[in-house]
Length: 153
Image (cartoon, rainbow, N blue to C red):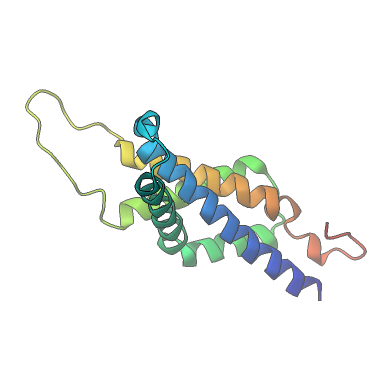
């Protein structure tokens, strides 16, 4: 029974973390223009549409690796905040590079391309947000369901 409850908590944590990641990606993409938002319906629609795309990308880009990482964290009782943040950053950054969206190469005569593009930085920051939110909801109690008499909350 504890395992079923834990699976529900993990699924909820992944959904909430995906939404938080989508909002972080939307803020990163649309943040420089935030002062221009006047509260118009179209602007809010664009913001939440971008947040929805970011959340969908965060969930879809790494679903299978995410399940594997969650299983490892639960098996070895990994409860570290830094490990969850680093794993989220690595997962979303690798998902960004594996998706093929990073192949935009613009030749510039003046300067070489940066070692890490702005989009890759946004993906890494979104991964950190994913890891932190997941840890706050489910990661800090990883593996606790196997202990006898341990409270789940």
